Image (cartoon, rainbow, N blue to C red; front, side, top):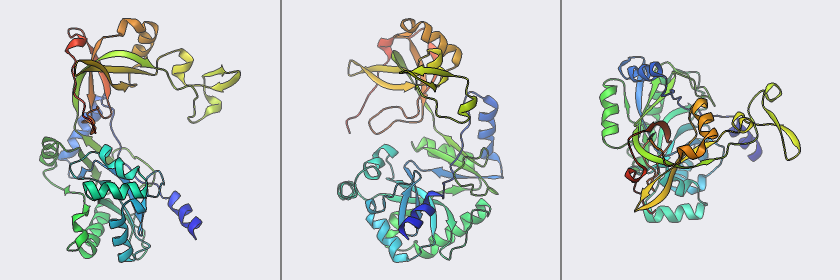
Length: 343
């Protein structure tokens, strides 16, 4: 039975929101226009770790079970006695980032419980329901209908109990979504997910324009201090038709285009932290033209200052999801300062 259950869980992939390419202005404009469209609802994007609940058991979207890391949630779900129930949501600490949450999700159960005794218990914020307590599948029902059923479930079984302080629904808006988004960003929270009101739950996919992430973005100036090597082996699709093959350690194998061309893999960016040059992040998302130029003249770009955009900071103060934007011609490395936090 245990093996059958785990095999079942492995086949249930979580649906995730898609993102636009920031370099494509039309996509960015379309994304922001969704805030004004009656065809989309906006839910607050929770900054935590994505987990699905199968009855009383909690699994990450990578299929790793961590049920015993959250005994207060586990025991409540055991008490409900709903083995058919499947929920989708986020393990999180309100006011903290996902980096902080990983101290619980990435720990052993004993370590996770000790940490929560010191810092408080994690929360579980739900945004979808795939199967009802009676075993009815909802993945082929439109989003708004699933959301209504989820709200009914919450009101009946969670609201008014002692677990209401730890188990929540994502905050949602069907109107005034632009104001909702701006309020979230102004308060320093992560952003929203815009969900098409008739979208189905497509397991294991990120279907474009069904669920879309809209997050805050910040920027800073850093300077180049080095480069990372590219990944060697190509492990993508259609290997037999792949154009880039090379002998590596005496073995002919498919390699990445960057390795084949002799290009860098990523740029290392640094800043002055307390007067010392300190690596802050790496960025790999640059054009092939610039990648080839830097690879041919690496020393030319050392200490060059660049604008880097990112999605807020980690608990330690590092940029999350950094993205290279452009080089600055009129700024020096000495002007690039940054603060990190000991955690």
